[in-house]
Image (cartoon, rainbow, N blue to C red; front, side):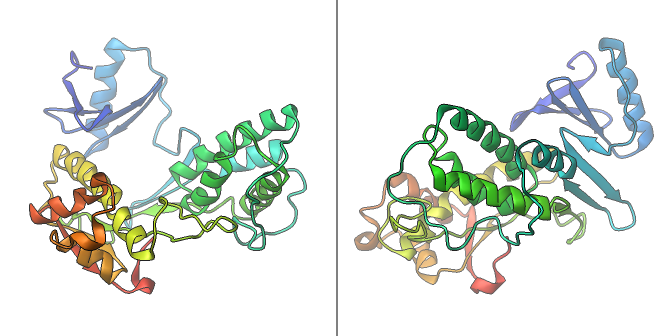
Length: 305
């Protein structure tokens, strides 16, 4: 890649940029995706790479890493979903999926604090299924992330309740296989300003009353603690965009629907309420003081997920 004029992005080592043409090349094992200002630029890069590698050209992007990709050039939007991947796995694992399900989690299902393990055969089958589902969730199906996260917690020792939830999830995916995400120009191309929303759930694990994020004492702490991982993600995205030529103005807007969490982040002297919280979660306080972030409070209904 270096001989062809490419340099890797320091924030994403599998992403390369041609210094002169401005063309981007994404490499995943033996799959390569080329993106550039014009088709001619992309073809030039293809020819450069062909000198060093044996390539099989697949044409304009329509599928990449099990993801279906549809481009709307009129609206400058891209729709991505793993429909084919989901249907293949539904057929493989999700028997009895004719019943429509509207949510990924069955609302009346509670995982007990302890359970009897299933057979080793079912354990292996369970692990394969959660692995397949996890791939879909981290790509274009954020609606199933929480359910998958809970199921994966039992990967080494699932019980009957976990199998029931898994069956329900397959039915949900069979009903919503065409769902995906749309990446589009909601804002002008010269306004690639990062906007982050951070939320948390307090005592949402039914049965144990534990919280998804950590073992914490109030909803305010849950919301406050979650500001740090959201901020860390924003910093990474900002650095990546800057390497691509889109410098991010400071401060980055970080939205929360908790007034108390915002107050804790803005007030470093509020030790009485935050002194028991681990220092790693107070990173956001320091970054707010340094001008990296502005914490914006919005209504719960205005939170964007």
